[in-house]
Length: 225
Image (cartoon, rainbow, N blue to C red; front, side, top):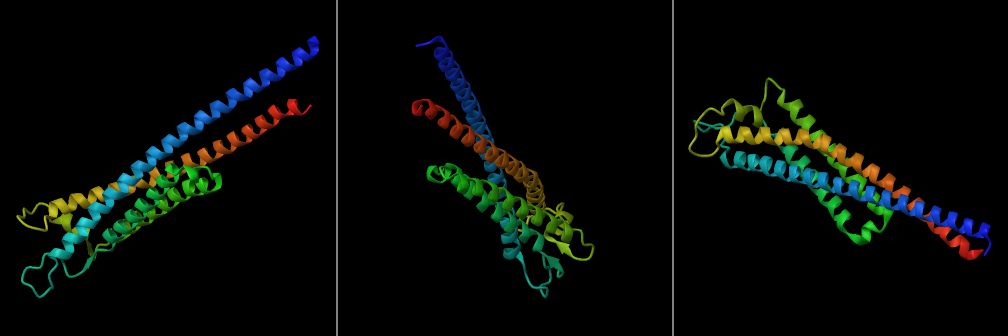
């Protein structure tokens, strides 16, 4: 075997090793971004479930303690708007379902093997969660700012200092309402971070796929010569 042929083979082997290292590096980066995205999705799911539980319990207490206006001591005002709390329930339910679907897609091997379907699920879930949380939060603030009609939040927080031995405990309901709203506010940027991580992961996976195909083609070329 001539020295020129040996040098050519050595250069080819070096190029293959370099591409192997590049491929492994990108694969590790994909795994890291995937783990980060899954962790943030779990946080968004936990927040959605918590908001759903808090807001759902608030509505349940309201329905169980509401009495008509002809009673001598009604607990709730005649002009009362529960739509902001209902919006939190609906929005958090959508956030919960979207993130559950995203986690299922990430943990299902058959779906992960289909790059297009997995990318679509990874991107769609945070988009849906972001829109749902943003709309619920905006709706809550818009109606709660009214100076003429009380909402669940404004009414319970107005009377939170009143000590009550039975439902409704206005202080507890006020804290629940505030906690649900704070979590809804936090879910908005959290879903944006999940979306950014999903976009970056899709970009990296495409780069890995392209490098892998190129690497496979170059490995096969010497055998064909």
